[in-house]
Length: 379
Picture (cartoon, rainbow, N blue to C red):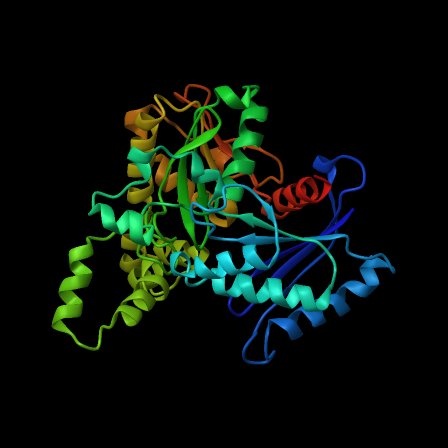
């Protein structure tokens, strides 16, 4: 089966075609690409997918797409597993847009565009928050009036679940632990970043909340902040509308606000050159992450491993080192030499006497989405 995996953003489409012939777990990448500047150079998502289809003609050699898997950030508490997309599912994804205003609207456009470009091809939605649906109520609820929860669905949902789920399975297998017995901490660190406490192979807690804004300091997102800061500022300055404040917290905060750049590589280079703002940004970011690691170590009753994944987690050894320096109280120690090695395979970067192993595991959300798509279509 040829599966087209699509990840639609508001101005971009990332895609990958995987051949699942043989076992589902053995999918091979046939083609991949990224189309940007939607809304400026490219009018809309439909035209973007037409460009994508044309780009795929040569690598597919006349073969046809059998199924399409879409990454969808937010399924609320309606969708806790991948589903075949129909009009009802599409409408519900759209209705859930307030929970992921930067993502779900784009996913809806992408699904509609894929329907036009590949009519009749089954499409599956794989939800980023589904892995987090196992959080118990005392973890996902906020201490706010009941009406907020019952009428507006205000609770913690999390994100990056497809990645956290995939990496959890790889980590347990790598360590020779049955997944159902695995307790760990997964740090998915990219421009968007989240950390998950895994207990018994399932999500117990995660740093992102009602939207993907909460938790860690990210590239352009603030992460955790006192809500009273926002209400106080909006009451003082009439120009700070809810929409403007939302934009500031999501697009103008995080590393960008403190260091002037949201690219971790550039921030690390600036710090190494003596830039005090860059140092402050990395101190804040590594401190916040270490604090979550300590809390989640307690939450799962003692983690069996700490795992770094995603763009920063996999590639920034300096940032991993900064985090590692803050984990001495847990007995966690990174090996500088092992930490400096880049690999496409899972690897241990901790010392032999570290209290628990620290791993770097490349994530593969596209592979996970393709596997889920095949399972749904075949069922």
